[in-house]
Image 1 (cartoon, rainbow, N blue to C red):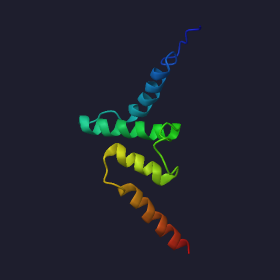
Image 2: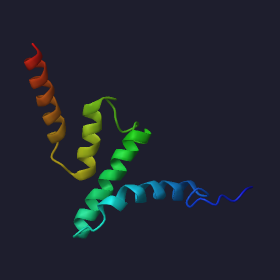
Image 3: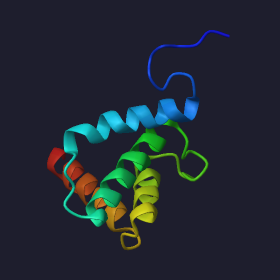
Length: 97
């Protein structure tokens, strides 16, 4: 095997942490642990959705299913984001008609 000189590339898990660190670097300086936790959790949820790691939790395979995953991750009231998306879609369709 060949040892890679680039940081984080030897270990898949560490490579994943490296990408997270790249996202966090511009927003460093969290004031509280609560904001740091919520921000990092948001990054992780969005990355999981993008990488397809949350597909088995997304039963409807659409934007509302993804919104429900985010709602569950952050403990937002049931359907709050999904309802907002539905309202926006209704407004968009009524303005087009």
